[in-house]
Length: 55
Length: 450
Image 1 (cartoon, rainbow over the protein chains, first blue to last red):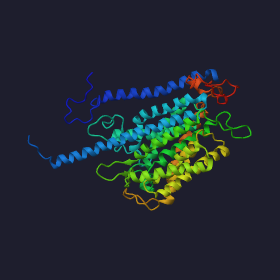
Image 2 (image 1 turned 90 degrees about the vertical axis):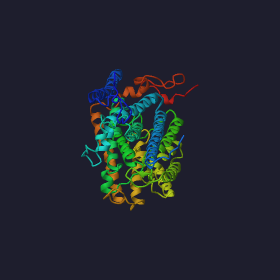
Image 3 (image 1 turned 135 degrees about the horizontal axis):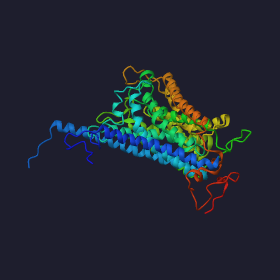
């Protein structure tokens, strides 16, 4: 996978992976947000399950 | 081989690049030192928890740190850049803080964004850790995480945009001066914690039916005290991060007034010392001596760049005396169970600091165009803004969560201990029972054997 936005370091500015591909950046960002939200949701579910025996 | 002298342009480039790299190096190590704050909070909270809750408190603290980092990337930094006017965002100024901006990642033309973002993330995580200690041993992990994200990546940074920003409205309109973030970090986090603690309610057994206060002791006072000292160590990174490194010019505060590290060194150490002495004077015990050290620093934090050092010492003593008394007052009078005194140390300490600067440092000029001089009225009103900014969302959100029965663990789980119920592990499985069944003696009353 060629994720480089540059072909030379001469004059390079933003050079992080997919810096020249807004679509790819948005997909990755959305996945990162989903992972964060998902972890909180998983915590809620874990607790709901855990506390069944302690109601 | 012929040697040629560098041109003026080459020398200029060299000087500028040296300044830029020095700036990065400075904030890099400030950020690293601030991680020690979290090592301290971790030890502090685990030690302040009973044995049956020690690991759950640790998990909670670690997760707060972990969740603040991405959420501050997603929206926290943007809030800081956008909201300096109040509630009206400046979209143009904040464009560089959008999570898809070319500034928000490796960029050879931007040495500043990442290193400042990193330092601010650590400030954000500090607010979450301040709140974390107040609610140990009975809050649900998931509700805590949501509240910590709201505090660390939304609420405090809004306060920072207003009063800890080159053109924040509190500075521009009221001349607000708060060098060490006593308002946006400590007051906001302390008052947020107070709001949540009211709705969360006390730990089971904290108050008897007749209102008598029962002292619930943590399982390791030494761990707590060492944790507090680590927080102090980390605060030297925190306070370094409050200074703007301007390359070839004098250091400045975040709102542009000149400052030196020497000034901050004088006053931080004097206030630290005063806090310990003040707390020792009224409590004679090490937990409050170290908490008093923190309260002492916060009580002088807004003017660490301005004070005559003995004045910082006296303000430190004031913070060290008042914090334990304030904690005792809210515990006995209002039956609020703030497990580590977070509100008293951070909320009250920060309040003393901000109002104290209005009393002792009125008349100092601001450099932002049109901004009034520092004044008692400006500091007092700004303290009110910070208190409300922390308390209202903390109380409001936790009130809704409590109504949804989502804020607190079930009583049986609380009595059993959260380590075995939720983690599930025991902190010291080869030495003492880490939990007790409902109706049995609590684990803290079991004598440890080797």
